[in-house]
Length: 252
View 1 (cartoon, rainbow, N blue to C red):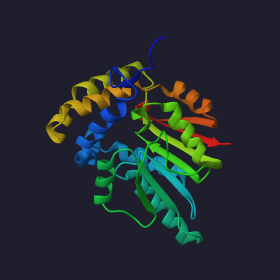
View 2: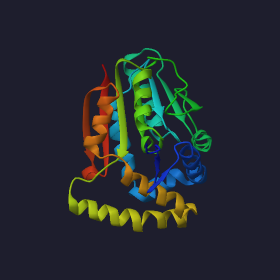
View 3: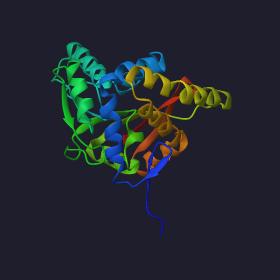
View 4: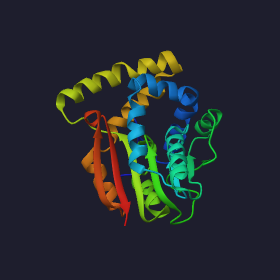
C-alpha cells in the first residue's frame, strides 16, 4: 500500500511534516503579507474580498467564523458591514471569530488594530476550537490550500455551522481560457517569487505559494469535495477569469 502523502508546493511530503513547513512559510512572510498581496495582485484582491463580504452579508447577532483569517482583511470588512446593518436594524452585536494556525499572522493582524466585533485565536482549520453548530456563517480566504487534509477542513466547517449556515471559500483557482492560463503561469512563476525576494526578502516562500496554487483542485473538483463533505447548494463564481473563485454552499 502506498503511504499517504501531503502536498507542499510541487513536493509530496509526510503529512505530519506539512503543518510545520507551512507554519515556517507564514512565520517568515507575516510582517509583509498585506503589502505583498497588494503588489502581487495590483490591489485586485481587495475587490475579490469586497465581493466575498457582500455575498456573506453579515447581520446583527450573527457569529461568523473567519478561518485562516490571518491579518484580518476579511474580518474587518465583515465587522464594518455588520455594524452598519446593526445601525439600520438594531439588534445585538455580531461576532467575527478569526482563527488562524499561525501565531505570527494573528499577531500581525492584531497589530493592525481590531474592532469590537472581532475575536482572535490561534487554531487549526482541521480541528477548530469551537463547539458544534455555533455559527451562522464560515468563510475561508486563500487558506484552504495550505491545510494538510482539505476534506477534514471542509468537514470541520460543516460541523461548526448551524443548519442553514453559509459557507464561503475564496481561493486561487484555474483560469477559464488557455491563453489566460499561459499568461497567469508566466506571471506567477517569473514575477511573484521575484517580488517576494525583493520586498519580503523570501523568494522560497512565494515560490511555495505559487506552486501550491497549481496543486489545488480546479473549480469543478473542489465543488465536488464540498458536496462530499455534507454541504448542499454548492455554487461557484469565478473572479478575474478564474484566477480566483468563490465557492459557496449551505449546511442543509
